[in-house]
Length: 290
Image 1 (tube, helix red, strand yellow):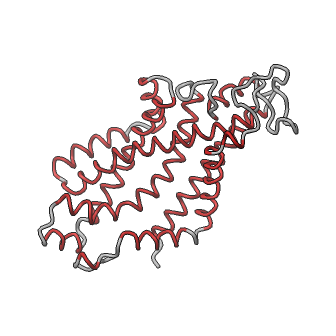
Image 2: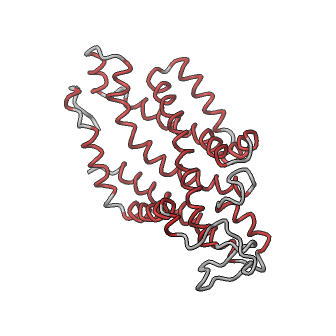
Image 3: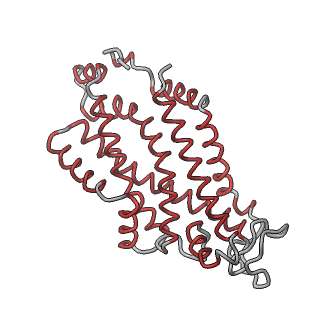
């Protein structure tokens, strides 16, 4: 999209944002994904009100009981209600995804802006470090960092955030390389605006939408990574509810109590599907030209 050379003619960020979200609401996949996400957010926020039992309370008279009217999703190896643990597990997954992606954006966004805008040796150093991180598979890097930092949900978030950071550096850098040559940026530079003002007032608002789209998709990856780390004993530690650790326990009882693995697995698949659908819908809305 070619904009006027007059910076004042640039559409306000709020107006562009409103147009973008109107397009989002016409994307069926985005709406379905957002509904799924909202469902899990409600479960996580209102878990104490929704959960029928204490997720940590053991009932030795109801160990590995099949789903029933009393326990809708059955009980686990310690007699704990799986429904309650699934609801509370949503907290760990969403919190891990949100904070991990937040770390990736807070670190990756400024580095991408600096690399793309200034270029030269600064861009070379940042790009080469980014390439080195991207050369290692995401999950392998997250596992290595989590093992180095120590097993805990907080360290898992940091490990996932660092692993996802290169994605945002490369995305933002690519956007800036295109935007900085637009007429409105050239006009702003010609009017004597400082680099910092140009980046904050003209370039940053134009990279926000792609970052939001990428963040939504990365949330799915982060949640899946958190579950994987918990499954390996590097994330949320028992007895706290976590879908990954629930799967780790359930694999020992696949024959006798298959419901122990079905429900946390289904929860992971559903929430990851929700974020992927939302991300695809947001991406379609961003690339659609009205």
